Amino acid sequence: MEIIKKYFDDFTEEQFRQLSLLKPLYTEWNNKINVISRKDLDNFYLHHVLHSLAIAANFNFNESTKVMDLGCGGGFPGIPLAILFPTTSFHLVDSINKKLLVVQEIATEIGLNNITVDHSRAEDIKNNKFDVVISRAVAPLGDLWRWSKPLIKKNNTVEDGIPNGLICLKGGDLAKEIQESGCKPFIWEVDKLFSEEYFKEKFILYQPVK
Image (cartoon, rainbow, N blue to C red):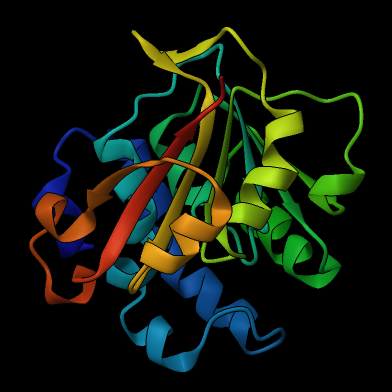
């Protein structure tokens, strides 16, 4: 938790309580369903929570924002962001139902009321539109954009002057992936936001919808 407090000092007491409950709950669930590697669990708040919150360093969601977490896995980046933005609606989608079971149970345990879960694939979602799609290390950018674009509302803004779009967390050399995607995303280096060795060669990509 100290690593979170190093970079975020504006959480409420309730939000810090919710964050502090995450590691013991994920540890308990990991013994039943393998949702997080043991190595990552040892560095839970750095590798999962702070990494997820990198999105919040550049984007501010409000009560009217609808966010979909595509391929949420065990709930990242969706759960940490839902804690930080309690009035924002988060819809967490994954094709593996047992992971969504963990997400729902943990949300219930910590009293997180602004998330819903959906056992589905993005391409199968119909009649539901979002302001923002977020994702972490799920698929190549081209696929993420192809799946996300039809689900993103046009002519809306995430915050003042910033259009709706796809926000994803990625790592490594992305030059070929970006070129093949046909996208022209804005890119931020996470280690410029959080000065931790773990975040070197990790990036936030933002592709606005036109």
